[in-house]
Amino acid sequence: MTARDSGFVINYTGDTSNFNEDLSNSLKAAESSNDYLKFSMSSLSCTANGTDGNLNIDVGATYLTTAQQEAYVNAVVTRALVSIITPGMTDFQKEKAIHTWVIKTVSYDYTLANHSAYAALVAPHKTACQGYSLLMYKMLRQAGITTRIVSGTLNGEAHAWNKVNIGGNWYNVDATNDDGANTTRFYNVTDSVLRQHGFAW
Image (cartoon, rainbow, N blue to C red; front, top):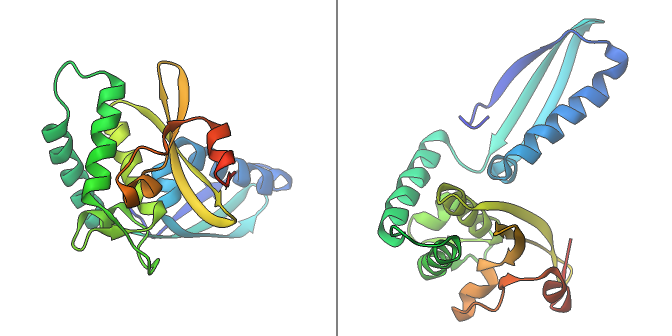
């Protein structure tokens, strides 16, 4: 799926009475291990046929980006990190450099037509909150910083942002909302601060 395969087949040889639970658990495990993949998927479908102990599961998936577009994202992210990360930087300094680079490079897509990191990195460099958090995730991970993507709401509207773990502590980072005013209002804030501003998850 990381290679943007549109379809593949899984052969299931277990007890079919456990099939739904096993499939659900497998998909959840895959999602929880890779937020970038999870939030880059547009749809996922599964159909099964066969007999007890020998099921063929046809999995179909669509994505926000192609494999070629992801290769471009990876190349741009690598170049950007080389230019903004210097030897001896702490994780906090790396995170700040990435946050600053993202909000200076990307603009919010008010049409809500673009949701990918790729859209953020090609002209006119516009994406929605999902794209901001995907790009932050990709850059932070490549810089060696543990991060997750949070899917929730802001004032009742769907919204996505990041959490980072530095020094054993989790912080919230919302590059989307920091971008408009070019600030750090929602940079490394606690859950309680987000809730005070209408975030929910």
